[in-house]
Amino acid sequence: MAAFSSSCSSYISSLLKTRHAVRFQFPSIDPGIRERRRTFSYGVKASSAGNLAPNWDALKPEQGSKAPSLSDILWPSAGAFAAMAVLGKMDQVLATKGVSMTIAPLGAVCAVLFATPSTPGARKYNMFMAQMGCAAIGVLAFSILGPGWLARSTALSASIAFMIYFRAIHPPAASLPLLFIDGAKLHHLKFWYILFPGAAGCLLLCLIQEVVCYLKDNVKF
Image 1: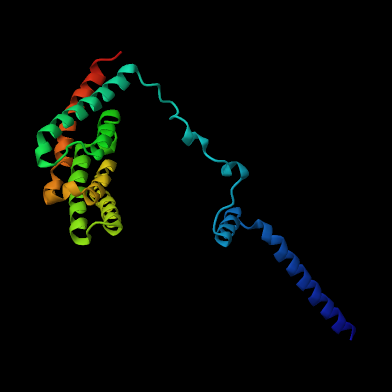
Image 2 (image 1 turned 90 degrees about the vertical axis):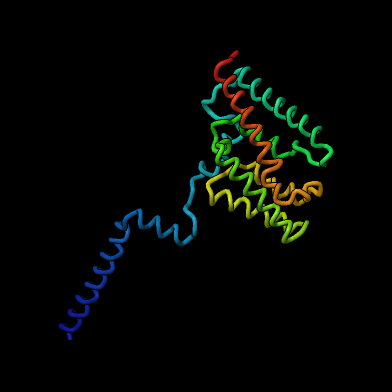
């Protein structure tokens, strides 16, 4: 009986030692594994209080950028004035045909070409590919779906997909389908809308952009 008691005591003692050893090994788990477990458990990684602070830098001018000179402001503004003046004169010639060259998207094109000529949106490929493709999408959407919210929504989503697929991001072009669908005076152009007034107007703006960029680089004050 004494031998049996001694054997039981030894067995229980060994179990307690084993349990203590296993418990003692838990803190040695790799911290990275513990962090990944916590991430999978809660869906997001815990952030410190400092990381939750709003990024106010986005509401300030770009850091490190110098203030524009007077010539950097004047020449793009003068280019926009010249562009709208020429388009306005062309409107007078085309008035009998009921077509206007001074459409809103060309104002946005002026801002891109004259103020930010080095950005992807100002590349000639991006501009003409997007202008012509989005205009065609607008005509198709109106022909199939007619006027209304469904045509506008479909045309806009298809235009964005088109620009992404062809790597021709040019934001002003996204407004061309909406302009055609809602502009009754443009409906008679049908697929001529692909070239006129958007693409034709951009060609004129490209010529003015060359003059503006030359003046910005060579006539500074």
